[in-house]
Image (cartoon, rainbow, N blue to C red; front, side):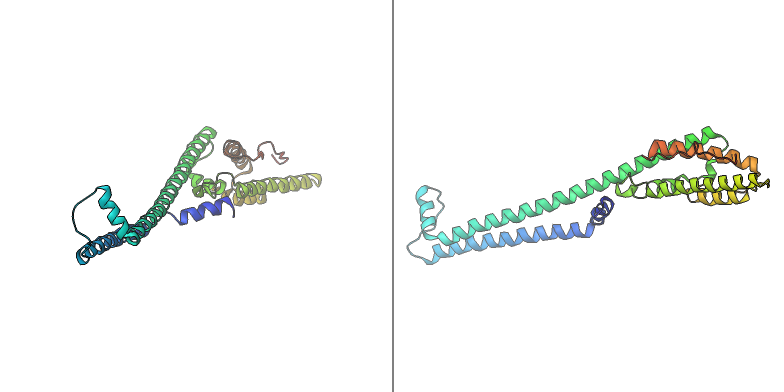
Length: 254
Protein backbone atom coordinates (compact mmCIF):
# COMPACT_ATOMS: atom_id res chain seq x y z
CA UNK A 1 0.00 0.00 0.00
CA UNK A 2 1.35 3.42 -0.95
CA UNK A 3 1.78 6.23 1.53
CA UNK A 4 -1.08 8.15 -0.06
CA UNK A 5 -3.43 5.15 0.21
CA UNK A 6 -2.39 4.58 3.82
CA UNK A 7 -3.19 8.17 4.71
CA UNK A 8 -6.52 7.92 2.92
CA UNK A 9 -7.30 4.84 5.00
CA UNK A 10 -6.50 6.74 8.19
CA UNK A 11 -8.73 9.60 7.11
CA UNK A 12 -11.49 7.13 6.30
CA UNK A 13 -11.39 6.03 9.94
CA UNK A 14 -11.53 9.61 11.17
CA UNK A 15 -13.72 10.97 13.95
CA UNK A 16 -17.30 9.71 13.79
CA UNK A 17 -19.77 11.18 16.32
CA UNK A 18 -21.94 8.06 16.10
CA UNK A 19 -19.03 5.76 17.00
CA UNK A 20 -18.04 8.03 19.89
CA UNK A 21 -21.59 7.94 21.24
CA UNK A 22 -21.64 4.13 21.04
CA UNK A 23 -18.28 3.89 22.81
CA UNK A 24 -19.47 6.10 25.67
CA UNK A 25 -22.65 4.08 25.93
CA UNK A 26 -20.68 0.81 26.01
CA UNK A 27 -18.47 2.14 28.83
CA UNK A 28 -21.53 3.15 30.84
CA UNK A 29 -23.14 -0.25 30.33
CA UNK A 30 -19.90 -1.98 31.34
CA UNK A 31 -19.53 -0.07 34.60
CA UNK A 32 -23.24 -0.45 35.35
CA UNK A 33 -22.96 -4.23 34.88
CA UNK A 34 -19.85 -4.32 37.07
CA UNK A 35 -21.64 -2.33 39.76
CA UNK A 36 -24.49 -4.84 39.71
CA UNK A 37 -21.93 -7.63 39.99
CA UNK A 38 -20.38 -6.02 43.08
CA UNK A 39 -23.81 -5.54 44.65
CA UNK A 40 -24.53 -9.21 43.97
CA UNK A 41 -21.28 -10.23 45.72
CA UNK A 42 -22.06 -8.07 48.74
CA UNK A 43 -25.59 -9.42 48.97
CA UNK A 44 -24.21 -12.97 48.70
CA UNK A 45 -21.91 -12.39 51.67
CA UNK A 46 -24.69 -10.72 53.65
CA UNK A 47 -26.98 -13.64 52.97
CA UNK A 48 -24.30 -16.05 54.22
CA UNK A 49 -23.99 -14.10 57.45
CA UNK A 50 -27.76 -14.07 57.82
CA UNK A 51 -28.34 -17.77 57.10
CA UNK A 52 -25.37 -19.26 58.96
CA UNK A 53 -25.55 -19.39 62.75
CA UNK A 54 -21.77 -19.74 63.14
CA UNK A 55 -21.21 -16.29 61.61
CA UNK A 56 -22.08 -13.02 63.26
CA UNK A 57 -22.61 -9.81 61.29
CA UNK A 58 -20.82 -6.67 62.34
CA UNK A 59 -18.63 -3.83 61.19
CA UNK A 60 -15.07 -4.99 61.75
CA UNK A 61 -11.79 -4.49 59.90
CA UNK A 62 -9.38 -6.22 62.28
CA UNK A 63 -7.10 -9.00 61.12
CA UNK A 64 -9.29 -11.57 62.85
CA UNK A 65 -12.44 -10.37 61.13
CA UNK A 66 -10.72 -10.26 57.76
CA UNK A 67 -9.40 -13.77 58.34
CA UNK A 68 -12.96 -14.98 59.02
CA UNK A 69 -14.10 -13.50 55.72
CA UNK A 70 -11.12 -15.04 53.91
CA UNK A 71 -11.73 -18.48 55.39
CA UNK A 72 -15.47 -18.53 54.78
CA UNK A 73 -15.71 -16.82 51.39
CA UNK A 74 -12.60 -17.87 49.39
CA UNK A 75 -14.47 -18.41 46.12
CA UNK A 76 -16.34 -15.12 46.36
CA UNK A 77 -13.12 -13.25 47.04
CA UNK A 78 -11.37 -15.06 44.19
CA UNK A 79 -14.21 -14.15 41.85
CA UNK A 80 -14.00 -10.53 43.00
CA UNK A 81 -10.24 -10.45 42.41
CA UNK A 82 -10.55 -11.91 38.91
CA UNK A 83 -13.34 -9.47 38.07
CA UNK A 84 -11.10 -6.56 39.06
CA UNK A 85 -8.36 -7.89 36.76
CA UNK A 86 -10.86 -8.31 33.93
CA UNK A 87 -12.24 -4.82 34.46
CA UNK A 88 -8.70 -3.42 34.40
CA UNK A 89 -7.99 -5.18 31.10
CA UNK A 90 -11.20 -3.90 29.53
CA UNK A 91 -10.54 -0.39 30.83
CA UNK A 92 -7.02 -0.52 29.38
CA UNK A 93 -8.48 -1.62 26.04
CA UNK A 94 -10.87 1.32 26.00
CA UNK A 95 -7.95 3.56 26.91
CA UNK A 96 -5.99 2.30 23.92
CA UNK A 97 -9.00 2.84 21.64
CA UNK A 98 -9.48 6.39 22.88
CA UNK A 99 -5.75 7.07 22.51
CA UNK A 100 -5.79 5.75 18.94
CA UNK A 101 -8.80 7.88 18.07
CA UNK A 102 -7.10 10.94 19.53
CA UNK A 103 -3.99 10.15 17.47
CA UNK A 104 -6.05 9.84 14.29
CA UNK A 105 -7.73 13.17 14.93
CA UNK A 106 -4.38 14.81 15.62
CA UNK A 107 -2.88 13.30 12.47
CA UNK A 108 -5.78 14.38 10.29
CA UNK A 109 -5.67 17.92 11.69
CA UNK A 110 -1.91 18.04 11.08
CA UNK A 111 -2.31 16.82 7.49
CA UNK A 112 -4.98 19.42 6.71
CA UNK A 113 -2.94 22.16 8.39
CA UNK A 114 0.08 21.25 6.23
CA UNK A 115 -2.12 21.18 3.13
CA UNK A 116 -3.62 24.61 3.82
CA UNK A 117 -0.26 26.16 4.70
CA UNK A 118 1.44 24.78 1.60
CA UNK A 119 -1.42 25.87 -0.64
CA UNK A 120 -1.40 29.40 0.82
CA UNK A 121 2.36 29.67 0.29
CA UNK A 122 1.92 28.39 -3.26
CA UNK A 123 -0.85 30.88 -4.11
CA UNK A 124 1.08 33.79 -2.60
CA UNK A 125 4.28 32.89 -4.45
CA UNK A 126 2.55 32.39 -7.81
CA UNK A 127 0.57 35.61 -7.47
CA UNK A 128 3.80 37.51 -6.85
CA UNK A 129 5.52 35.88 -9.84
CA UNK A 130 2.59 36.67 -12.12
CA UNK A 131 2.66 40.28 -10.95
CA UNK A 132 6.39 40.45 -11.72
CA UNK A 133 5.88 39.13 -15.22
CA UNK A 134 3.44 42.00 -15.91
CA UNK A 135 2.36 40.54 -19.26
CA UNK A 136 0.51 37.73 -17.47
CA UNK A 137 -2.96 38.15 -16.00
CA UNK A 138 -3.87 36.47 -12.71
CA UNK A 139 -7.48 36.09 -13.85
CA UNK A 140 -6.28 33.90 -16.75
CA UNK A 141 -4.39 31.45 -14.55
CA UNK A 142 -6.29 29.10 -12.25
CA UNK A 143 -3.75 28.71 -9.44
CA UNK A 144 -5.93 26.25 -7.54
CA UNK A 145 -6.07 23.97 -10.55
CA UNK A 146 -2.30 24.30 -10.99
CA UNK A 147 -1.84 23.44 -7.31
CA UNK A 148 -3.93 20.29 -7.71
CA UNK A 149 -1.83 19.31 -10.72
CA UNK A 150 1.42 19.73 -8.82
CA UNK A 151 0.13 18.28 -5.53
CA UNK A 152 -2.63 15.79 -6.40
CA UNK A 153 -2.35 14.10 -2.98
CA UNK A 154 -1.80 17.22 -0.86
CA UNK A 155 -4.93 16.59 1.24
CA UNK A 156 -3.49 13.18 2.13
CA UNK A 157 -0.24 14.70 3.32
CA UNK A 158 1.80 13.73 0.25
CA UNK A 159 3.87 16.58 -1.24
CA UNK A 160 6.38 14.65 -3.36
CA UNK A 161 4.24 13.17 -6.14
CA UNK A 162 4.98 15.31 -9.21
CA UNK A 163 4.32 12.70 -11.91
CA UNK A 164 1.28 14.46 -13.37
CA UNK A 165 2.96 17.85 -13.39
CA UNK A 166 6.14 16.37 -14.88
CA UNK A 167 4.21 14.69 -17.71
CA UNK A 168 2.52 17.99 -18.57
CA UNK A 169 5.83 19.86 -18.67
CA UNK A 170 7.29 17.13 -20.85
CA UNK A 171 4.25 17.56 -23.09
CA UNK A 172 5.12 21.26 -23.50
CA UNK A 173 8.72 20.35 -24.30
CA UNK A 174 7.49 17.86 -26.88
CA UNK A 175 5.37 20.59 -28.46
CA UNK A 176 8.45 22.82 -28.66
CA UNK A 177 10.37 20.02 -30.39
CA UNK A 178 7.54 19.53 -32.88
CA UNK A 179 7.46 23.24 -33.66
CA UNK A 180 11.26 23.38 -33.97
CA UNK A 181 11.16 20.60 -36.55
CA UNK A 182 8.26 22.18 -38.42
CA UNK A 183 10.02 25.56 -38.47
CA UNK A 184 13.32 24.03 -39.68
CA UNK A 185 11.56 22.01 -42.39
CA UNK A 186 9.71 25.09 -43.65
CA UNK A 187 12.90 27.16 -43.60
CA UNK A 188 14.85 24.54 -45.56
CA UNK A 189 12.10 24.50 -48.18
CA UNK A 190 11.85 28.29 -48.14
CA UNK A 191 8.23 28.08 -47.05
CA UNK A 192 6.45 30.45 -44.68
CA UNK A 193 6.15 29.16 -41.12
CA UNK A 194 2.59 29.21 -39.76
CA UNK A 195 2.37 29.50 -35.97
CA UNK A 196 -1.33 28.59 -35.64
CA UNK A 197 -0.64 24.87 -35.13
CA UNK A 198 2.03 25.71 -32.58
CA UNK A 199 -0.35 28.03 -30.75
CA UNK A 200 -3.07 25.39 -30.79
CA UNK A 201 -0.78 22.82 -29.18
CA UNK A 202 0.40 25.25 -26.49
CA UNK A 203 -3.12 26.50 -25.77
CA UNK A 204 -4.17 22.92 -25.09
CA UNK A 205 -1.02 22.11 -23.09
CA UNK A 206 -1.24 25.19 -20.88
CA UNK A 207 -4.97 24.69 -20.39
CA UNK A 208 -4.22 21.42 -18.60
CA UNK A 209 -2.08 23.47 -16.20
CA UNK A 210 -4.86 25.97 -15.52
CA UNK A 211 -3.78 28.66 -18.00
CA UNK A 212 -6.27 30.16 -20.45
CA UNK A 213 -4.76 31.37 -23.76
CA UNK A 214 -6.21 32.62 -27.03
CA UNK A 215 -4.84 32.77 -30.56
CA UNK A 216 -2.81 35.93 -31.12
CA UNK A 217 -0.45 37.50 -33.60
CA UNK A 218 2.76 35.49 -33.68
CA UNK A 219 4.83 38.23 -32.03
CA UNK A 220 2.30 38.84 -29.23
CA UNK A 221 1.89 35.13 -28.57
CA UNK A 222 5.67 34.69 -28.39
CA UNK A 223 5.92 37.36 -25.65
CA UNK A 224 3.25 35.59 -23.57
CA UNK A 225 4.83 32.20 -24.26
CA UNK A 226 8.22 33.30 -22.97
CA UNK A 227 6.64 34.84 -19.89
CA UNK A 228 4.77 31.62 -19.12
CA UNK A 229 7.95 29.59 -19.47
CA UNK A 230 9.67 31.85 -16.91
CA UNK A 231 6.69 31.61 -14.58
CA UNK A 232 6.53 27.81 -14.68
CA UNK A 233 10.30 27.49 -14.28
CA UNK A 234 10.11 29.54 -11.08
CA UNK A 235 7.24 27.40 -9.77
CA UNK A 236 9.05 24.18 -10.67
CA UNK A 237 12.22 25.33 -8.96
CA UNK A 238 10.45 26.56 -5.82
CA UNK A 239 7.91 23.80 -5.20
CA UNK A 240 9.18 20.61 -6.83
CA UNK A 241 12.30 18.47 -7.12
CA UNK A 242 12.06 18.33 -10.91
CA UNK A 243 14.99 19.50 -13.02
CA UNK A 244 13.00 20.55 -16.06
CA UNK A 245 13.57 24.02 -17.51
CA UNK A 246 11.33 25.43 -20.22
CA UNK A 247 13.16 28.73 -20.64
CA UNK A 248 16.50 27.12 -21.50
CA UNK A 249 14.91 24.82 -24.06
CA UNK A 250 16.12 25.77 -27.56
CA UNK A 251 13.32 27.33 -29.63
CA UNK A 252 14.32 27.88 -33.25
CA UNK A 253 10.97 29.44 -34.12
CA UNK A 254 11.40 32.38 -31.76
